[in-house]
Image 1 (cartoon, one colour):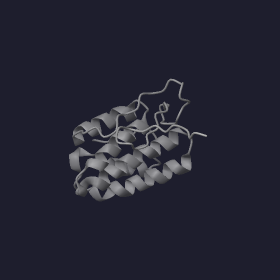
Image 2 (cartoon, rainbow, N blue to C red; image 1 turned 120 degrees about the horizontal axis):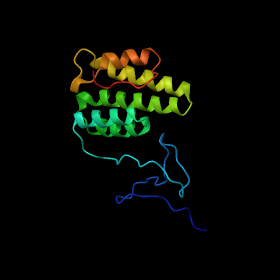
Image 3 (cartoon, one colour; image 1 turned 180 degrees about the vertical axis):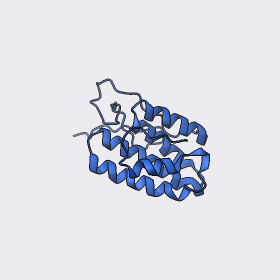
Image 4 (cartoon, rainbow, N blue to C red; image 1 turned 45 degrees about the vertical axis):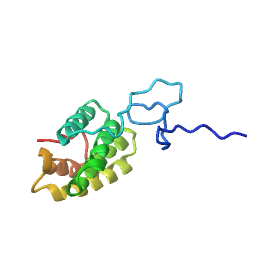
Length: 147
């Protein structure tokens, strides 16, 4: 008996090569999917915010989350919680689009808590005050990452 083949990257880390829909849900291997954002792409903060906003505007919050997650993983320590919170806001939008209202609100609330400490001096022009207000108002619609 042989085990099922696992998708691995060049370093041997498990990767799921199944195609995904626009909200990141896995599809059957032979189904057409939406191209995923490449992982580990080095971007400046401005590039990350611009790309994430484009994806949010295109109705692809899962993909925006992947861009923001890359920024979070590569951010300097003083900014890590900002990027983590932005990624959580995008995941919250993903859950909302998938019909998981409870999970969506939980992640939007968590993301707002993580970005709120940056309100008085927001890095990279992030509209922290606007995003926190958006989250507290229920997180509906497409947020604006920058003012």
